[in-house]
Image (cartoon, rainbow, N blue to C red; front, side, top):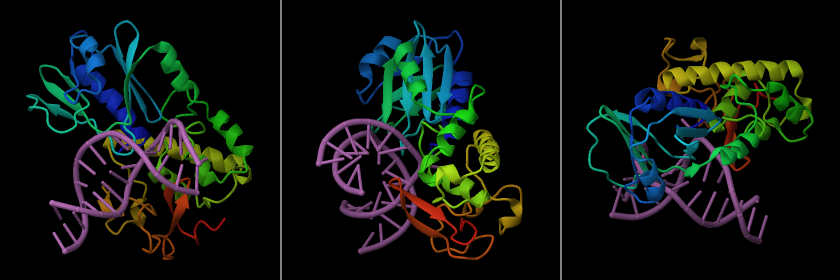
Length: 266
DNA sequence: GCTAAATGTTGAT
DNA sequence: TCAACCTTTAGCT
């Protein structure tokens, strides 16, 4: 599930569910976060923050739990009562009304403000953050010979974009993933940025990614069925929704890239 | 019951 | 460029 929208939604939901002055139960049944969990247990969750795919839970004394879901991490919030822990449960948060179980994260660590600052410093512009600087992303893009399909996956350029948004936003703007960054025009980049912000915001709202316009869905309702949600992502060999050309795939930056060779010729 | 794949990152080669 | 790692689930047998 995790691209930037997931992280920002989690920051918001964890704050509204566990935030405030009441102490939160913190535990690590699996044990890998047990020492830190013991320190935090019973303390209030004071604030939350998200930058790209990184999530931060703020506890007293300027201590933060830094969470990165990685490829398959999950952190669902459920109504109490919490069942007995099972499986590899890295972190459980609980209060009188809810519990949230973190499984499979690539990172779950207790850090201080300096370490948090280091993480922010190596992340690029996040379309979901008010303090984002898209002009910095443009600087990187417009000076690079690297393919735009690779640059979009670089978290130090744009933070929060993953494999789905890369493929889909390039299609929506009919941009070839292979176009070098410096051959993308400022006009094209600004349109991509605005679009990414809108797509991510919609993702935060609905907790899922939908990039297709209604006229490109078999079912043209406002709510896309899962099979109709994407233009090219994981649609290898299927006909392009716009021109009918079979969707192509190959590996770029170690991930499966999907694109329409006709609509995205250049 | 087994295998592969998955919306990711890091560190070695 | 590649393998390793975090864990679950879908799709086989």
